[in-house]
Length: 109
Image (tube, rainbow, N blue to C red):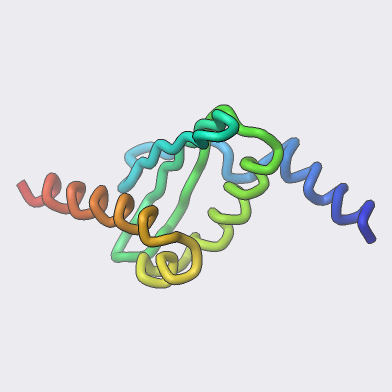
């Protein structure tokens, strides 16, 4: 069982399905891990309060790539509220919420 699990994770690492960048994302986040130096660029497309798609790029280790894949799989198709409850700590939510509000204000101008 462990070999199967490792094999699946290695496949995700080698060919992550959500790796890349979105054209015209609703939200873009840049995060860096202070301990290991991993850098994550996350772009999210939101329409009618539903997360339609998300992609990531960056200088990431095995664990960060797997984590980004799992996170994105978890949030796609959910409302922003559902994603906040299940996936983000309060600091992350505040960061995303500020960017969403900023984007909405820009579009209304």
